[in-house]
Structure formats: structure tokens, C-alpha cells
Length: 176
Image (cartoon, rainbow, N blue to C red; front, top):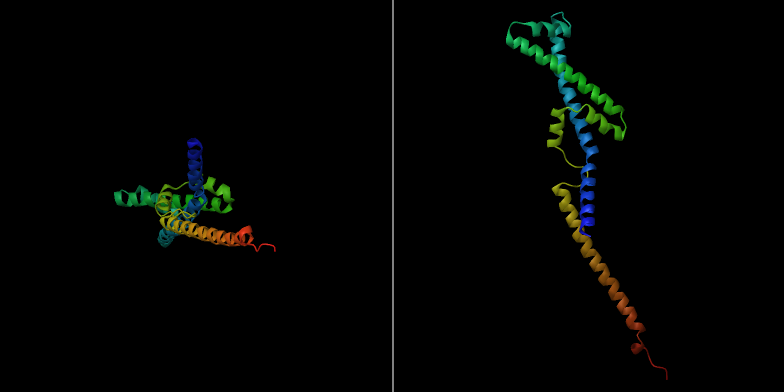
């Protein structure tokens, strides 16, 4: 008996946890879009500066990386990483947009970006009311249901008692 109860409890817990995966994927996608927008702005500014110098992005990155000044070389390395990350995130976003509801989670796991994933987890709000607010609302609803059910049972019981009281042989008029 205890084993069945524990099994049901764990089943309910895991069902609640796993039901959050699609919502996490949705919140991850929102952060993914924000990251793409911000990285795109950075790369656009870099590309505009590069064009003003009459260069292509790859040429400018190579020159920066080869620069004898460590700051310039490091800046070139970081900008190259930013461009690569932007391309990777755009690809993941495209895959997730084209994916169906269930394959979207697979796409998330396959190309997971840890920075976005951690940020999405830190701000994650469950889709099912598993927050404190949701639990309080559920408790209020539960108490209201108990009181409502009790009041309904009392009213039905009173009506039944009254009907039974009319049909009791002791309350009927005897035949003359």
C-alpha cells in the first residue's frame, strides 16, 4: 500500500517536472532571440567600421588577431568568437522554428547554449501553476471546494430529511 502511494507520488512529481520542459524550451527560445538581436547589433557595428576601412570582416579579424598589440589581438579573437556564436545561435533558432512541438526540445538539447540556458533557468517560471502564487491559489480553491461541498451536502441532507419526515408513518393521518 505504501509502495503504491509512493509510486503515485513520484509519478505525479515527475509528470509535473517533465511537463515544464516545453515551457522551458519556449523561454529559452525567447532568450535566444534576445541574444541574437544583441549579438547582431555588435557585429553590425563591427562590420560598418570594417567597411569604412575598405575591408571585409574576415580580413579585419585576421589583421586584429595578427596584431602585435595584445589588446588588439584579444579584441580580434573575441570578435571572431562573437561572430561564430551569432552564426551558431541563428542556426539553432532556425532549427527550432522549423521543428515541431516535440522535436523542438530535441533541437534545444542538441545545440544547447549554456549561457542562454542558465539565464533561462534562473528566470524560469513554470507554465503549470507550480509557483507559490499558484499553490496558494490552489489551496484557496481546495478550501472553497471543501466548504462548498460541505454546504451542498448539508442542504441536500436537510431536504431529504424533510421529505422523509413527510412520509414517516407516524406523521400520517390515521384512517378512520
